[in-house]
Image (cartoon, rainbow over all chains, first blue to last red; front, side, top):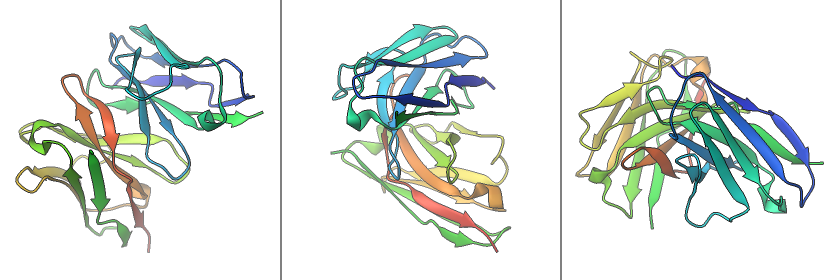
Length: 107
Length: 119
């Protein structure tokens, strides 16, 4: 199985901040990585797939980068609706695995 | 509009069984691969199982292998998860999620159904 290390687990930030979340794989996965946002009591929502492609309807302040083993999700200007938990997921091989999650909270 | 609606969750005793369903609408269900993903209370997401569009290819997480069975009925636009020998650690919200072809990121998720395993 491919192991994923997502960091940080908790990120305190203010509206307008630029934030980055990291996801590191135990082996290379090319660009087979997705990022999801989850708000309390709701299902996850797809933000980015293929490491850097923005899902339709997702604001352009979200961006993804990386390939191989190291990936990053960036929110360029944090908005109030962005306070949530974010997960990376590899779909390169089975079992599919998720990162541990990063909770973005208000500072 | 794509919709995935899970049902069948509830309270079950350890060792018991439960069958979850996911009703799909708004897309050609038979053309899409599907997954079950779960989330224990206060915890992160855990992928559980995958089934190909025809049902011919199936994968499971080690944590449920031998106890859970994924299946689908394309004529009924429905996905299922038969869960046997349930344990306390299976307590979670279970989501069905659609894979976007060809590579397989999950682009639509249901709202989830809660399974509680407790005596």
